[in-house]
Image 1 (cartoon, rainbow, N blue to C red):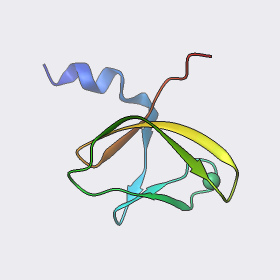
Image 2 (image 1 turned 90 degrees about the vertical axis):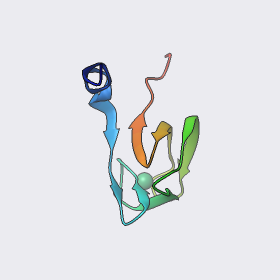
Image 3 (image 1 turned 180 degrees about the vertical axis):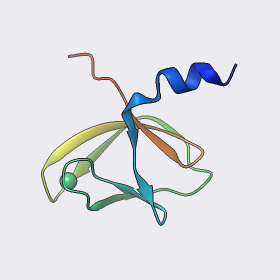
Length: 68
Ligand SMILES: [Zn+2]
């Protein structure tokens, strides 16, 4: 059952020291607690002006597939 999650987890984002790391510039962009959960959360990085849509599940972040 758990293996289904892995197959769609190709867009995993880095979380370090409780912060989501921007995939573009590797700066900290969002505070993430171990019990944080969100769906289709839009995160804007002020450093590289990049917008990333993320799903957060128990402190793990995944980049959402954009419809475009
Ligand atoms: Zn960035």
